[in-house]
Image 1 (tube, rainbow, N blue to C red):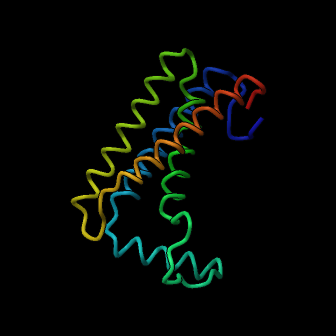
Image 2 (cartoon, rainbow, N blue to C red):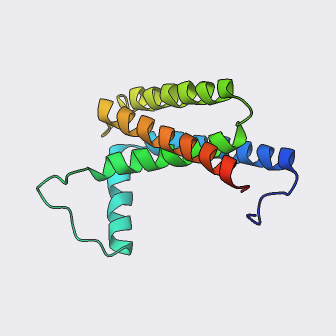
Length: 144
């Protein structure tokens, strides 16, 4: 069992719910940041990780799609652990995460240096689906 999760199942479920909602707030803030600030953070991360500078040729899968998929994967996994009572809850989470993905992209259309992208919504949806699926699968095979 993870040390920050209580042993009581209902308390553990509440903890996952708070983690999920807090993480969604963080995702909303991160995806609403101006493009110039995002570029500065990206350069800082590259310097800390000692990554080579970006080349002119685009990679096979752009890093921003991986970031979107990763953020929504974590959100989906946390939400899936927090609301796993019924099949109806699963479909509500899928729809909610998809609407959240569309909302963040619409907001980005109005943020300086950012743009809305259907590819980002697709990456968000794939990450969320994988996170939800994994949380359901892990919940059936082991207790986290």
